[in-house]
Amino acid sequence: SDDAWVAAVTAQLGKVQHTSNLYFTEPCARLAQLLCERTGMKKVFFSNSGAEANECAIKAARRYAEQKYPGRENVIITLKNSFHGRTITTLSATGQDTFHTDFLPMTQGFVHTPANDIDALTALFRQYNVAGFMFEAVQGEGGVLPLDKEFVQAAAELCKKHDALLMADEVQTGNGRTGMLYGYMNFDVQPDVVSTAKGLAGGLPLGATMLGEKAADVFTPGSHGSTFGGNPVCCAGAISIFERIDDTLMADVRAKSQYIFDSLTGAPGIKSVSGMGLMIGIETVGDAGAVVKACMDAGVLVLTAKTKVRLLPALNIPMELVKEAVEVIKTVCQQAM
Ligand code: PLP
Image 1: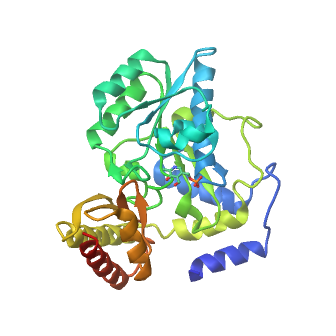
Image 2: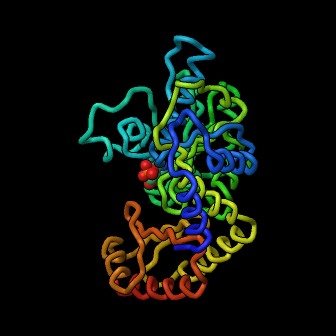
């Protein structure tokens, strides 16, 4: 119930709450402009969720390859242990068999390669015609595992060399989560496609797929669309959030992150701490599920990621609450040993 967000959303509700996608609205255009200004991207397609934002990225890569190399059979490379969404095609992009089992057959055209293995990735680029490479800067559902900078930079080089699209899935790592506006910014690379959602509109459904120079003209009117995508109310909420993801907030996110890392690393019952910014994974001695439950009973909401406890607090969480939560987590981890 953030005041600025409530004011922005309710003001927009009093103006226009929906239009057909034949028209654009001021909040939608303004948000696209803000996103492009701060990422160097050229165009934005708005949808309603992270999975849809990734579907759009996947369609962009396929269409890019089809337009440049007509009739060629292409693949999109993603990482083992990745997570890209729950529609059939984004599940296919997801490099974890457990998510596939009950929903076969998957969409064709995806190959998965181990994270941080430059040789394996290079070999796939030799073996296949690659339309795109999609990655999370920090594998979230996969266990809060940041990628190596050298690996992401090598992937960017390979994409350039083979005319494939470098696609950053910033659904979980985006909008300030890692202490930078987008997670890829930690690696000094410039993706061709960036997809994001989750916190973008402060809790209202909004997905965005940003297209850089290379892919800017890949979609033409009618080649992709969404009835509710870019809804003006959601976009107005997003503008009020996005304008506040500034250097001050990012410095604050990094400071809180440092405090959490310093407080939890080496504490009894904690084997290791991983992640970036306010996206943190804790490898616990005791069972992670039991730790999550005990934290919840003590008033601290956390979740799991594989066998780890995962922290994804609101970026504007006050420092006093961070301190209080850290004490609870430490006590619970020690008791769960
Ligand atoms: N991509 C990543 C990296 C995610 O973490 C998620 C959701 O957790 C998604 C895509 C799917 O987003 P949504 O649930 O909004 O469809």
